[in-house]
Length: 75
Image (cartoon, rainbow, N blue to C red; front, side, top):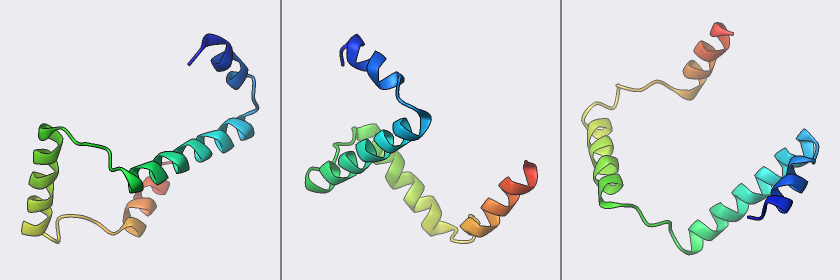
């Protein structure tokens, strides 16, 4: 990305930059559906390990609602 383009983007309002971020994220997600982003061997092994841990202890996590409430209580 050129410095000129970056400078122009940073001149956008916060709302405009957030909209751009959302559009960029959506385009990345769409691209990944067509062509999945390749994982390194280390990333693949880590994901497999985490999945195995989650399968071994399905009660080890917390529902999103509970986590969100704990976060809100900290603020």
